[in-house]
Image 1 (cartoon, rainbow, N blue to C red):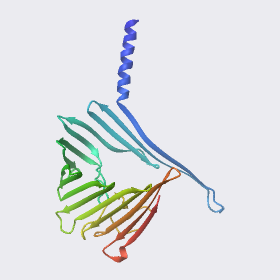
Image 2 (image 1 turned 135 degrees about the vertical axis):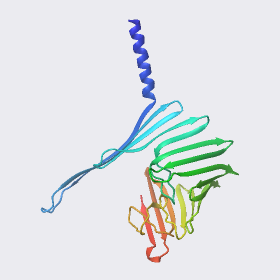
Image 3 (image 1 turned 120 degrees about the vertical axis):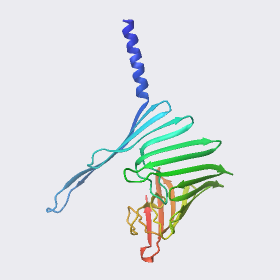
Image 4 (image 1 turned 90 degrees about the vertical axis):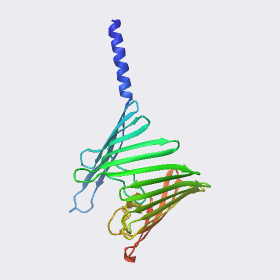
Length: 282
């Protein structure tokens, strides 16, 4: 009897430890819409739209494995990121399939097979990323170094076809960030700056981005959803063509427990006919 109790206790202990190292998180959105038409020739409609995201995380010591799934509308579940992170002799490793970061001027990198190594040495952060985009496509590599210099975070990135400099800091409560892209291709440089602060309960942000005649800004940030193509002023996207400049001001505050924000994006294209002006209230 004692032996059976001991075995049961050990099994329960092992199960609780294993379950504690696995977490499942996610979010779900469902909307039901009924349209009762007053026109006899038009049929009534009932529609259900849903979006669901699921994230499974497993941990064992210094190693973490992550896998995400997405389901939008009637489409089946689609695998998103799938990667692991670990530490080897002080070097942080991230390997698998995952998307890259986004910015105000460039779109996030695609979900490809990647490996990122990073190491901190006396306040200096070093990293190297290799991307394998598949058969017939050359690997791309990015090496970065960053450190704090007199209260300003300085980052330099060496990419296959460009160099980048990032500067960010705060002066008297005002946050300032600068990004410069020096491309190996002629007329393909870009610069961007973001200035933000809070005044009397209102968050104020000003941003601008300027591209040379051969570069098309593409990203998802303070300027909105920027996609390559002709300039549009729709409610869902702000598209740009090569050589476009963007100016955005955004105000955000809390009203009755809700966050209310307004932004204006001015699009300055090479051709005046492609200029645009987008106001967004959220």
